[in-house]
Length: 166
Image (cartoon, rainbow, N blue to C red):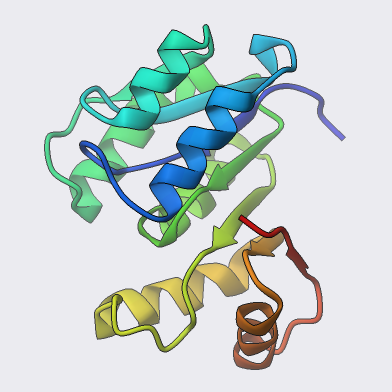
């Protein structure tokens, strides 16, 4: 297995809430060597700002809107800066397909954190379809609660979802 930094994808353009705040807390508390974590996020994102302030690598997504094609093109452009990474992790539902596609380009595993229930009203129907498809392709999944984890396990027919509470 390849050893190298973990790449976390976050597509939030500015200051988010919920999952994005949890990511900011993770980055602020990061104690390990700064070279163990690499964040790919838009320039104006709070996650990118926290990463830079902590001395972590912030790979800038050049797009100015959180839409699939611009996100995909930004990730594709950034891939050369991620070639030493050992895994690509999607922090939230907007990055699942990006994590999977980028991991295939780089020849490394993909993982993601499920923050929402599979039937959450916060997700559009098209996002739910993409999320279920991409989650089923991931090499590893984490969920933020036991109950949501069980729902996702039932939905995906998968028994290997780790629970990491926020």
